[in-house]
Length: 304
Picture (cartoon, helix red, strand yellow):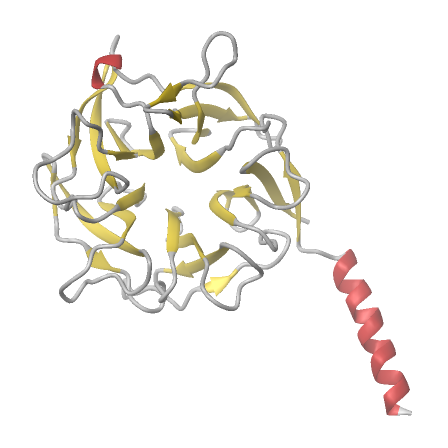
């Protein structure tokens, strides 16, 4: 008798789960055949994301033979959409034509970006042209974001990317792959943090540790105002590709063991770049899941 009842119970429990998914998820109308990724909140109801730069005829701009990536800003419309989208205003004299991610400080005075070196900006010595690094800029009326400087802890032979700031703007989180010493990278890339000391001065990078990082790759960190860290990782045990995980900062300042988010926030394809607009209840993420419109699409999700 048990051999008959148990499969029936399992069958109905699977149906019940499928009908009561905790979140609903919607592909945004702004998506097309181009990639859209690198989500980050700033200001009041504003968001940044990365996509291809296009000319007046709608053709993708290119730099050194590759499609040019740029940062766009938009406004959250309160109904799950992003409206009033326009390129972030950057001083054209700065020649920043391939920015892959960005964040703006809580006071609106600094822009942090992920970018590669160019033939004009490449440092001296041994380094890989494919590596990324972090730069910071200031805003000037009538000009836009200008006076970019490489963050002093970025070593040319390693890669640094995906900046995000704490609520007060005093701690900068990012991914890196640098080696050596106590804070060495454990996997392909780890999440690190530095204290923002002012005047383009920062503490030494500190690895967030094994409760957050793994021997795989960690990417696209994002810290909520409630001190919950969301990030993507391709560690074993996921649904497939990159999955989104979360870890919280306790009262002692330590991070808890990272937990994988459920479906449909994660899928069998790459999922990353999550931001929360309502704590635990709504937000946006990027995914390359099946039936998307383009390469990487932005989705809105909300708790049912």
